[in-house]
Length: 208
Image 1: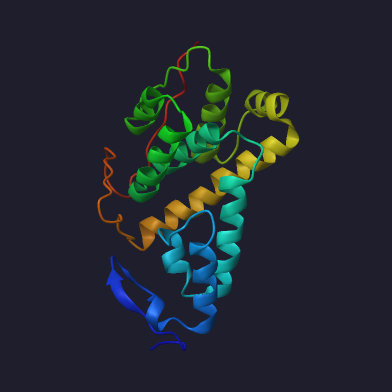
Image 2: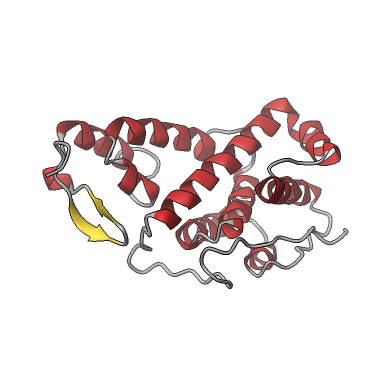
């Protein structure tokens, strides 16, 4: 036992608190997570539970950014896929490639992102603008004036704030998954070309 916490099931680089031996604070947050929209404890929250206050704030922020923004789900998931691909986060990619497909994102777009090829959006300007915003910010830490203006024109200032927050939050998620080597859940697989620890370069989209 360390810092008053019982842990078990070491996987990757880190141990995960076990429901049967969690502290009261850990168990409270755990129960909140599994009774919410996620329904299960996966990914970075397994590590964050080492600090239950952190895990609590983390899951609340994640719930807002994943389920409660003004952006359509397919577009949020596209931004998350770009983020996962940039940081080469296999678990983040696996979860959100599935969710993007369910939300109606064109599978050809997801596959182009996976292969770091220029996606073709046809007449889907909404998706093209989201992709370019996400691509620029994860590769440069900023976006061009035209790219920013396109998002504000379509989704308002609130959309620009939400989109930036989604990308920042899922960068945190990707880094946590990568650093702690949090494994893929049983039955889940993900194939991202490229070397671990090498950032992916995402090209500009093709013209419509």
